Length: 75
Image (cartoon, rainbow, N blue to C red; front, side, top):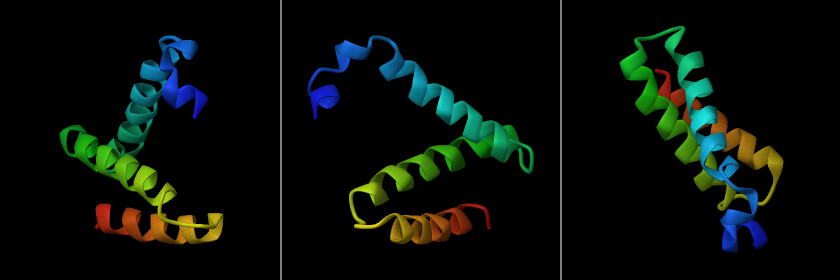
């Protein structure tokens, strides 16, 4: 809550870290597909992961649901 309520406490890292994470995921997906197609897949995967975080009660259930989401994205 402290960081969410006061994002300026961490400076630019609040903006640069999510962008860098998206770039890394996109790069990993682009190894197997076209770069332009990889970016929306990466963005959707990140959104699914964040959304699941608020819907599940355990790490095991989170990983199970994320595995399904990734499977849908890489078909």
